[in-house]
Image (cartoon, rainbow, N blue to C red; front, side, top):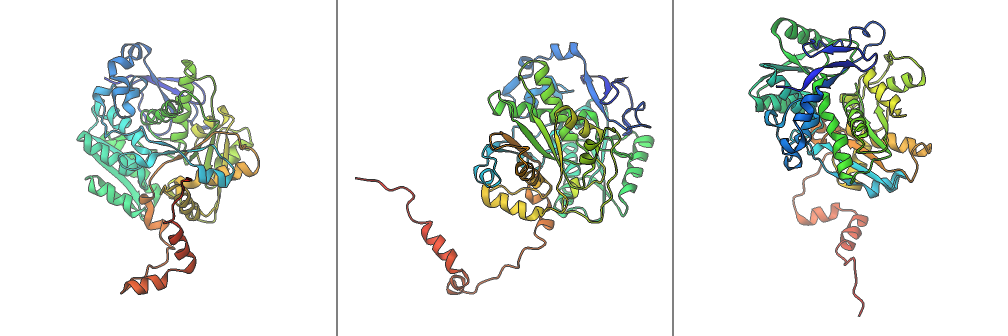
Length: 433
């Protein structure tokens, strides 16, 4: 039994029954004017009956410790122990960009190495309880890899419609978990294929498959609420001043915001953070500058290495979260994400996916304009591991030589590097007698 009592439009507030068919168009009433996703509405009676103490509460070592806030009870969850990712101080990088209180939520520590596991765990749990046999997604990588893993865990079939040029490591993940992979030359053909699977065969589609995109399945987006729950718990009841995410259609942004709102509604927190969407092309930034709910499709003349956030048109759910939080969208454009990735690794030892380092470019931009101040506590959500798209991030790496002797290796090392290696062996602390 799920806790899905019905659905509610994020834009107009219209309610729909629990048996409403989620067909990727979002709210029928808003579709013609400004397409909007729906959010899940839980049954208050069920939520009271399924209190945390009856779910095992914080004894559960996954995001399902918050099961009383999710659309499926913990006993029916499909889980690998996702969530509870570390919140790490980033003093060197923070000092470099003028934000001493910079924290990093490292979502690369999830089971399939991305934040999508929060979505997939909840979506697949709901799909299985509802009797689905096939789950499907149109994905360039992380969503497909995650959904394939959770489908395998649940004993369901997974279909992933993808396109030529998707990152190799993520395609390997999808294939290895037994998913049916269907690559298309045209990205839009993926959606037509998925729509036919839903309409003719009853597939449970977790991703969008209609244009304009409104967002992913509302049940899965509930999983992203746990980001807010964990942040407040890890910060001992405090709330960051800013939360910065890489954003495409805004599933994680919308879910994170919903989580903070729920905490405020129950008076667990007394204020809300401001949100920042680090986007590539500027759809959200343009929408925030006006008063329209229909987001523009931004023209672009160049591709981006941040494929997972490379869409030219975002979704209303992201715009709504930014407006409600008095947030900001920062188009990073042709920012050198490979250099940002390397700087993060050098300063903090974290190897993040190229799209995942976009928040640091956005934070630095906002800091130089004093939108983010030196006193602010800022959380950057790094959404995936750098191993996910290493074929792209290593495209300009110099070829490594192979040495035939120790003497040759030493001759290759520069004098400056030798000095550093020597000084690294000197004691850091000395004892005075």
